[in-house]
Picture 1: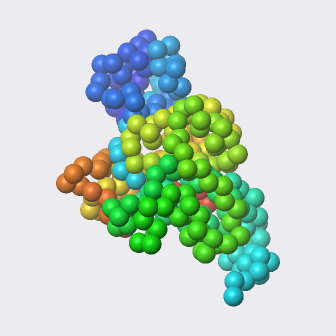
Picture 2: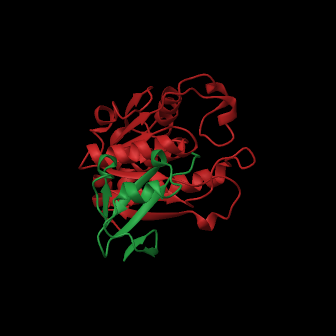
Length: 64
Length: 210
């Protein structure tokens, strides 16, 4: 299983880009952490999720 | 009569201890955006004795900023970089300042920020926040970024918190309270988030990384 923002999912073999395209995240407002490291934006399409991964999608909101 | 540099540093050492003071003094922090977050962060870090601040904002002080940003009525119309520099000169005269009245982009962020040990993301626009955080983490491998997301409205102060996302990425705020027409920013909640960011910077400099 892969844990994304605390929720277990069955997405092994999918890429970060696959996951994002199936969600409502705005790719221009997020940062993606996987197992304690930031995933570079240019690598969303080639980063394949593996069993046991922990992922956090940080979605920024406006204000400052 | 403004105290001399040595007397000033002695007073900081008395408060922070020699070891902490040295770490703060030798640090360079960048503040990206000098609005509600950035103006408060810059003042807190200057007061604490951070050696050098890089202050970046393309905008000018507007009347609609004064309800939450650390400027004065007499500064309306000035570049925020200039106004903040003037204010900091009065608050903490021995802080080294570098200012850039430019918009930070993917193209120039490496050039603007490569001298910084820690970058504070203090923009108001969500896309700009994401651009800066991703840009620093991708292009400046030795630099830590302390960002903010979610501090609008009149929600409880207790939902504003600091999370360590990676070793180089800290995120402050409640994560959800976005600016909307009905939910504007109020000074104390923005200051609260700015305080989280400034304290996180000092904690990192002092070696408190958790």
